Length: 172
Image 1 (spheres, rainbow, N blue to C red):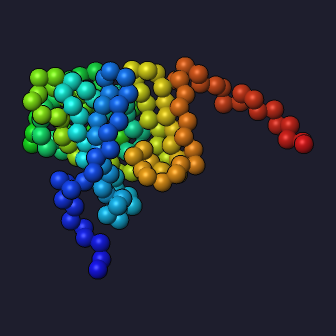
Image 2: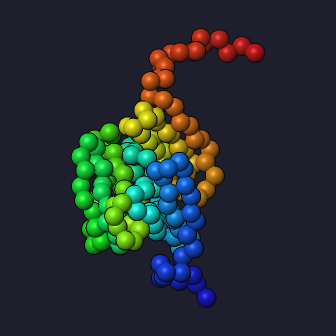
Image 3: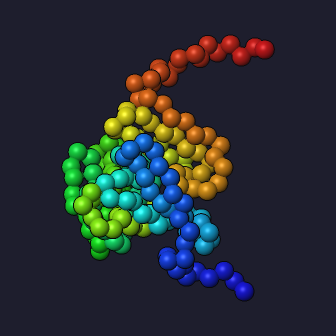
């Protein structure tokens, strides 16, 4: 029997993670397990007052969030917007002006529950305005399940000149 393209969200097993006092979420990827190769999708639950990931912008990938339950706030560039059940948030690829982060409301009686959908292009460069970092991914887009050939995080201030270390001397 072929794999069903219908995915009951209430049957997904969520993996929980935390980092420090501000980051906590539970998530389950489901697009790749259903056979998608160019589309990523996860169900995400964020407890009140927490956020799943740092404020970030993808230079190669569009993201879309469908708010299923709860309420919170979208950080979008330097602005903030309220979000609640029934809202759809579109975050196109771009620079710091398109950096985004969903934060669950501290006074919400339920977690912020949403679908995160991504175009899954790779390689991707991800910019983190709060920490001044850049991330580079190749071999699997951010959110992908495959092993990556390249993952690197650098401070934006650590950039080098293009010719740094290039002497042209390639003799053994």
